[in-house]
Amino acid sequence: MDAEGSDVHFLVPSVWTSVVGLPDVSLEIGLIPAYHRFMHEFCGPFPDRLKGPIVASTRDAGEAVREIREWGNSKWAVAVQPLLDNDRPVDHPDLEPIRRAAEEHDLAIVHHSFTWSPPYFPGYEDMWDNVYLARLCSHPWGAMRFMAGFLAGGILDRYSGLRLCVLECGFGWLPFWVRRMDEQVSYVGRTAKLKHLPSEHFAAGRMFCNIEAHEHEPMFNMVTGALGDGVLMFGSDYPHYESWFPTRSTRSWSGRASGKTSDASSSGSTQRAASSRPRVRRSPRPRSETRVAPVRLPRPLCSPASSCRRTPRGSPRNRRGGECRSHRC
Image (cartoon, rainbow, N blue to C red; front, side, top):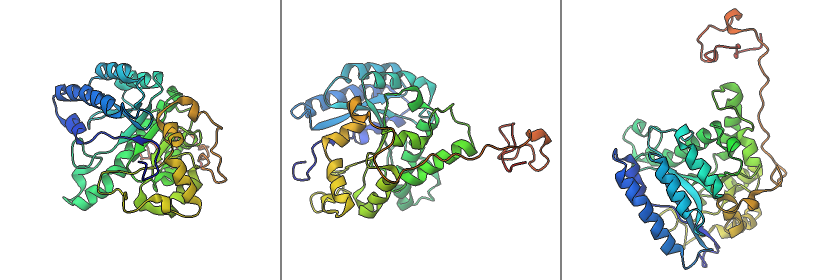
């Protein structure tokens, strides 16, 4: 960390979390407390520099809440990482106690996608047995689905103290996905009753993602230009093969990115996502000249679908059973 120039590292649990794919939850429930004891011992000598998540079983919310209450005030614990199987959406009502406990302990929610191990990733059965396609799609798709489900479920509206961070999933897709989420709220609906659009949560400093070095400086500048400089965090991925350390470093990036990446590796930027709430209380918009404005489509000014002769009942844009959404009648 000293050689790389990072002040704080957030440590992500490894492949053992794939036990969420087993039908019997008992092994998962047994491993999680052991992992928390390990983190307490491993991070203990450097409590201000080594951080990690409290892993939460979504198949036993009561046990998850117990673990959050036991470790939530520990200096190493700065987030909650829910383990989701393939049958449980991120906004499932059974998970409300977990979200409530996370907010009570001022912990962010973090997501890290899977590739090689259960529960795998969205569309994993549709890769034509092509490992390249699977590895290419897995982490971004998993993060996109988690983020969209989390925001469309109105979770950040209900819990004003929560923050969300997606990890090791690329970051160049963020401006596109933010715009598309906003647009689909108006175009499709079928979300919870939302007080804020997804882009507004980004602008308020409640959404975070770490950089991937292979996406390079131009992509970094594009994302910070679109979403502000408070979204991206430094990411090392050490000791995985994709890590640039120790042969290369993002600190060599020039121009606009050089200062930003060093800021992102500092404790201030890391803890905005995963630690004390006062650090994320800031102006409603990031201090950036280029902002992502919420996309608000005009409301249809059409007659009820039953009297609209140009849109057949049951068409994809009319399944909500209300207004015609294909044109302005």
